[in-house]
Image (cartoon, rainbow, N blue to C red; front, side, top):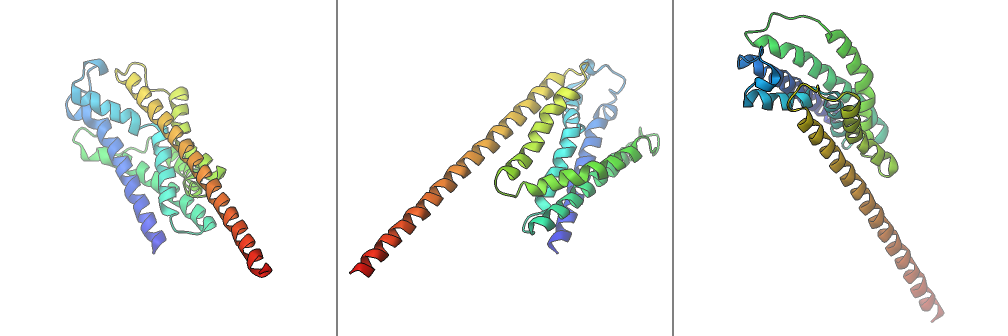
Amino acid sequence: MRLIRGMAASLAVGAAMGAAAAVVNSVPLLLGEGGRARADRGAWSQTAEFASLILDSGWAWATMAVAVGWLVSRGLRPVVGVLAGALAGCVALIDATVVYEVVPMLFPFHQGFGWGQMPFWLVASVVLGLPLGAVGAIIRRPGPVGILATLVAPVGAALNMVVLPPPAESPVADSVMLTVWGAAATATVLVLAFAVCARRRGDRDSGAIVRAGALDDNFGGVVSGS
């Protein structure tokens, strides 16, 4: 039952991601500004473009797959959790891809359904969704493995801005890059800070256990000696 709820949540997250990306992409057309240069569009179109450059980026979709993998693996045994997370990442990306293509059909300016690049992205959803979902499940593991898995999303976002930056002609491109880099850097620092705190707390707990054991041994020796 827990796994079924997790997959249902993955479908919901994927549908929300695909719908949100499709809607913000369509805002300039809905406002009748599709034919204008990007710099000449109004505030709502500029805001929508900012959201579009984030929601329509590879790192955002990859982060979604990692997130659902983490979500679905909760309370499951490690191996089962990784398998469930991998499946969830795949399902969420496929769902998001389908919804992304279907939602624009609801708008009057849409010319009808066309497959376009959809088959390519469906295959990519399977190929990339499985490992990304598994990474999300591995986040729950303690130690360096879990820390490295947690860093996949922020590091991937930063690299995405280097390898595939927002289009230079967009007036919000710099703002998007600064936002993503800032968020990625903040997330990385927080992950490492929590890891250091957890390590120190574990060392203190281990030291307390050792000291308690030594006290017990000493007390036991005094009692037996008396």
